[in-house]
Length: 299
Image 1 (cartoon, rainbow, N blue to C red):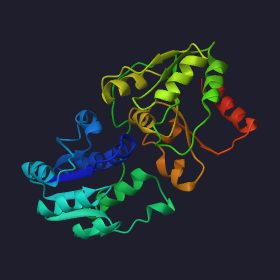
Image 2: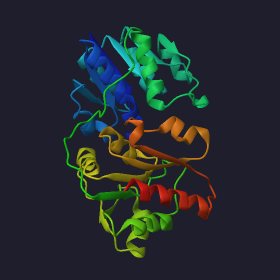
Image 3: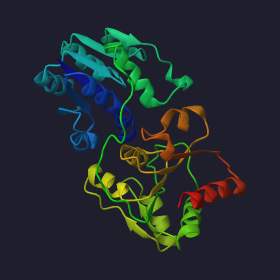
């Protein structure tokens, strides 16, 4: 049997769907195919529990053609929209599983009401519940890390202060610099940036002399680099979830509203490696000092 798992949005969203593939591959003999957005294509090909990868296309005819080439018996979609649902329907996949949400649910024949906005569990746990719709005898647990790079950790702390607009909660850029200054005599420090973090990168370059690295050729190379650090400090964004793949310890900042909080978007790493803070919109200096104290303890 061939199972097509789909999650065709951003980096962190895709990573929260990976436990679905791991559980299915480790507990069944099925072929696992993953449909992903272009940004996640190379990363998706690096997991030994994924047999094949399809790149998502906004063009329905192209997407249907790509799906038909792998001939899935079942599709499990962690996130749906009209184009995806329409394409899976026209591809005539016998069993199409998805959350019972949005108008696009009409294209699926096995649906689960989840009410994710209530945030009763994390995003990756909601995704795993969809696997249960396929086979309720499976154990919804998995071994970590999901990506074992056998990397030796260095006396290095990485700060990723940009977020490309994907996060609702973050520290001020000057507070990232203050955090880095508070430990600069104890560890090596590097600030990392993605392609959308232009303004944050310029601010750091203008206001401090810490090393900067942003020349990652792909997400795999970025993940390898993160895995060499003893701590990854960032807001809730794609790179934070890359850290979670390898059980790299994290100090992470989330939005203060429930939907953007760590209760929804915590990483897939072991909880002992997670240090999560919900950041109020106008947080106080006393609140910042709590985070600085935690950073001191972690290193």
